[in-house]
Image: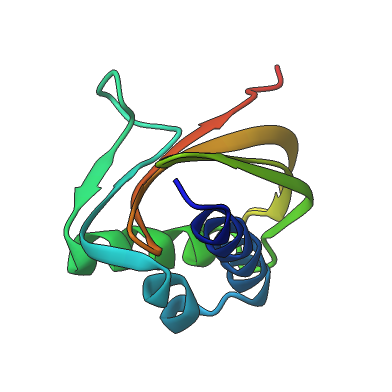
Length: 127
């Protein structure tokens, strides 16, 4: 793995995090590879809810913004090792009912070239 590709992927994760904070769905999807997959933190399956393909991933990302219109992912850090990457973050947001969320989490990534093929999300679940 070239150091140049590692740096491109690291910048990709930083740009991806910024796109989340900007609520920029087009920028988010520009980071994703064709045939991408998103495994959310919550869901009834062992992998959470799974969205496969660009349309399904986009709809899942949009749903997050609909539930948390003020969502932010801050205190983010990122690292890349080969075809894998990790982003750690603090998520804050407010639901329509006024309840707020403040928790730590991370995303595990699989890259395909200079794009994200898989985003697998994990978060703490404060009681």
